[in-house]
Structure formats: C-alpha cells, structure tokens
Image 1: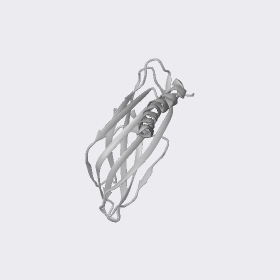
Image 2: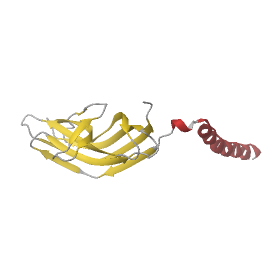
Image 3: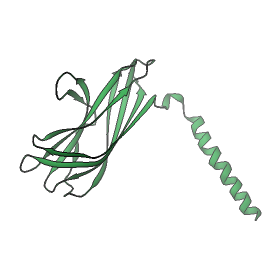
Image 4: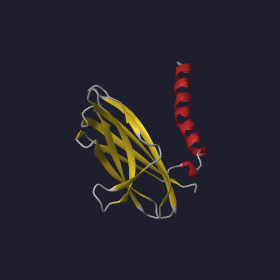
Length: 172
C-alpha cells in the first residue's frame, strides 16, 4: 500500500514539475508573437477553368514589431475523382482591386494533391514568408486549388480545412 501511494505521489510531482521546468527553460524569444487558427467546412469545386479559390484569412501583425515571419500550416481532408489530380498553393494578397485578387505565392511552393479515386484523404501542408512589414499591418492570404484531368475540367471537394498561422518576430 505504501509503495502504491509513493508511486502516485511521485507521478503527481513529476506531472507538475516537468512541464514547469520545460516552460522555464524556453526563452521568450522562442515564442510566437501571435497564433491565428481558422476552421472551414466543406468546399466543393467543379472548376471548368482549372483554378479555384479556397478559403481566405487575415493575419494582423503586432504594433511594436517592424517585421514578422509568418508560418502557415493547412490540414485538409479532400476527395479527387478518379483520373483527376490537383495542387494547393497559398498566396499573400498583393492587390485586392482586381478580381480575382493578385497574390504572391509563399515559400513552400505548390503542393501536389494526387487522385484519391473519390475516397477521402487527409494531408498537412506548410508555407512561410519572411520579413513582412508589421507595425499593425494586416496581411490577407488565399488558399488556391488547381487541378487537372483528361477533360480539362476537374472535380474536387474538401470536407474540412484547418489553417494555423503563427507570427514570429523577423530575424531580418
């Protein structure tokens, strides 16, 4: 009985002490300045022109920082019809005055989305951009999908899209 009580007490102490010790060792410079999380429901694409806009989101930068790095992770569940393939790219809006808006692709490039033969698949994609102007600036991003099929038109759908954007002080 004593050994069991001692083991429970030791496990309780470690459960509190280890996370505290790890947090105490992490320097404040290693923490993100902000984190934006967005969840989107289903998007269905029946794109005739081989290109479709997906979710859009904004990131507000801190007032007291001149430049930031932004890392964006997107997890999506999708379906592509048999014989169809696609790709995803994340772009930062550079001109909202035109339709569709002009975007600049983030580093990480274009991620291939292979055919799923109509079955659901899940993938996680990452992009980043360095040295964006901050000082309270708002940056808008668009997740774009492009596809290909033997007929030119393609059919795709997402069941869920989760976007996490972390804002870091830029190393410049």
